[in-house]
Length: 315
Length: 257
Image (cartoon, rainbow over all chains, first blue to last red; front, side, top):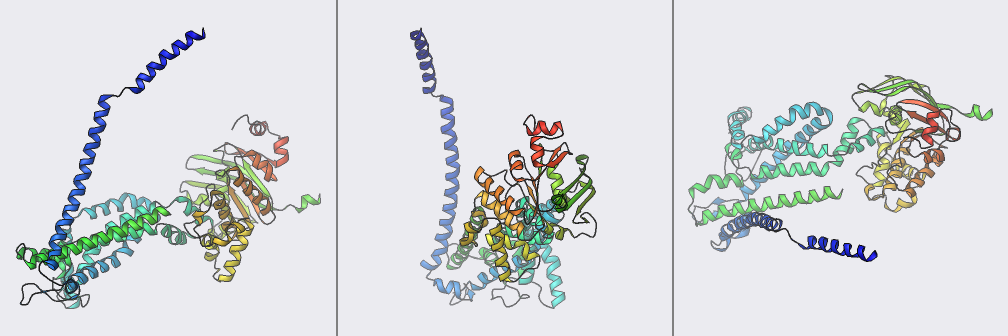
């Protein structure tokens, strides 16, 4: 009796064992080909990024290593005259122009954007979700040339009449950029604020805090890394924007002197001059160096965003 | 007789009905809650006990579809009357939630949160209040060396005691505890129970719990709710040994719920 049971068991076991030892060929090939395709895609992406970086770096660095422009002079001198005799390659006006116009845009757009985010998540969530959010998404989708055109047609003449100046100015650039990055800041900040657990709001209200105290001290405080992320994202967009800025900023290569004076940025400097230069000339290479600076800045923005993201996770 | 006259009612509900939209969640409840005692609300899920609790500090105001009828009298004042300042009411009637919900701030800042809003700015006063609140919540010895650490570095049980300390720091008269130990392990639960028993000398405590043993251990009065109705409310000993209503008996003996 026991012998027979054992026999059946062994037979069954061997069937199970056999099943476990066989490989489904289709599954196997699918698995391998899937993996390969995914790896090729990822590999292509890495190659593209690396080769673009290499290309920009090799072009941009040849200003210093081939054409013998001093790196310090490039960054700190304010005279930009690549075609002059002797030529001068000081890009400080562009760098400062980019920073100032970005800072101005962030200064205007950050409070407005976060305020709007609070309004649409905390104060009127119904209206916010149904009306404001789609409108803001629409604003993100408007091409930058349209923003620039509007700025050129409305803002520049307005500033000209109000202040009796040229109109093309740091102020105009900052305002147009602020308008452009406002939707980005608003929607990212709104997501961050919405992600704050309802429990925390309840806790605050149950402790006798008013709605405003709750929003300010609990909700915004908890969403702070997310709001900073929103601002940095907006700033990186503003820093890299070329077209809209170029249309309203005046493109005068000199150090920014005031809100109402025309200036240049790194991006507008590149787009305006690149058509006039010949590949391989020091002038052309200098523009590539400016592109390299932009690349370095966007790298820094990404690092900041990563650090903020990590901070958010740590909480 | 003298014992009876000592007991003073602090919360009185008269024919309270609570609706969530069409749903009639709390039906015609009248009860008295005594000062400096622990009252437990028991009953199966959805019986209205938490809803009633949340009406006692008007947390239901946050739910747009919610409507409260009848009167809730705290220390002689109808809390739903227009003269009552809701923030001040919530200072008098503190609340601790089911899930520990410390702010993303330091331990110190969590405790100092409410006192700051209620006008305490002197640092020494705040320091003292933080210490006394943490002591009352039996947490001081565990955190005194790391008051500046994030409250989220505490364990779940510690976080819940922190939330109790945070509520104590606004010097309330009444503490509402909404299943404060249901997400905690047995040891942390025991600590919360010990804490509740200590706190009742100073505060009136109303606790919602699913744990019948907990209700039996820590409360003086127990109210049994079913389908939004108050079935029976009496001395805890009586509820658990010889309840008058057969539904109560069925529930406490584990035949349903």
